[in-house]
Length: 213
Image (tube, rainbow, N blue to C red):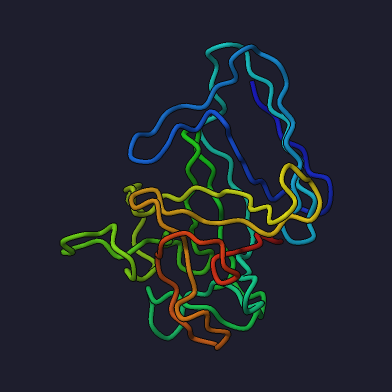
């Protein structure tokens, strides 16, 4: 049986699970001994508090959904679906508009989906008709939600010089489930309209994100 609590404002939930065992195979998360696991993180300026209690063999509820924005640490701009070109994903100045707001759906296997509030389409890494969908440079887009692996992501807190810390988080990496690569603003750009793509994870500022409400 699981529970989560908000501490400041609306709940924005990030799950980091030591029981998650890698990419390519989804596994249910469980706590080995039924003890309580508490994980507190700073993501942006919002204190996130996750309190999950599992009996042995029990899994958390199928999904939890919350709304938020994805803010890039390098540019201060947000992940945005272009209103003039449906499906195009880019970074843009934050207007807190619906096309810049995402419903983050957390699943029991440790993956998440990002659903654009304005269009109802899922964040998706280009994969159709591509010889190697795991390669660097495939762009992010939105697409009809299918539940496929290129629409699933894993959120991982980053601590640079603050290993094991709670405050002082250096953002999160957003790792594409199908490729094990990170959501990345191309060319370390700070410009409106810059392409968002998948790239080898290196924890540069253009791969660090804050999930805020």
